[in-house]
Length: 146
Image (tube, rainbow, N blue to C red; front, top):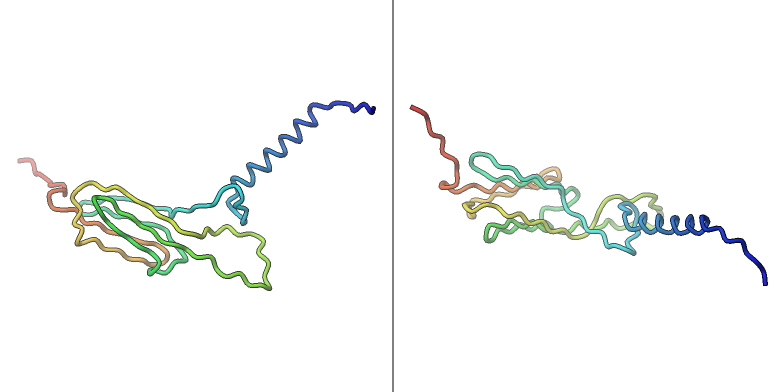
């Protein structure tokens, strides 16, 4: 029987390296490693308000406006769509892929009083802008002091 010297720190180092590899794979944003977690993406969005409107702006570059769906029901604005991955060329090798692909869905609850029939959406330079006009009873009224 052969005696092997036990080195507890060597085993801990091996375990640490294995955990690091697992977390790198799990948290990997670049590349195509989705074994542990299918990647979901959401467009970066701003929601702001002025005197007469709620304004939602979402960054959705690389999409056609026909692939973006917008709905408004019961005070909730929903934006969804799908960005399709470009076909890889067989003669090219990808070294880094950070762009995100797939479907997305964003929903926002807005206060009551949106004029549903006056909602307007535009898409320019990768920015989707949805303007939701406020109903008259929701708009703030300025009162002058006598």
